[in-house]
Amino acid sequence: MAKNDPKITFEPRPLKVGREWHVVATYPRGQKEHIAGFHSETEASEWIASEGCQAWLRARGYAE
Image 1 (spheres, one colour):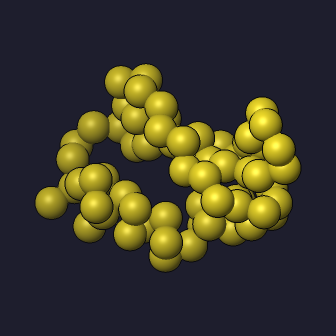
Image 2 (cartoon, helix red, strand yellow):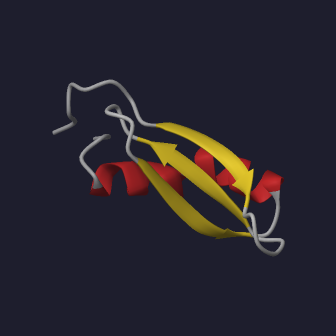
């Protein structure tokens, strides 16, 4: 069952060290989680729109 809290927001960002990109997930109460392992901004953005992101949200109770 999905939580009734506001949604988690996602933003692709370059990692400060090296060339790796990651997605910053911001929870409704402001906590941030970094999801690493992307090779480009495009790859990070595509993940946000993918089933992989939906599975990530389901694992945390934010999607059905």
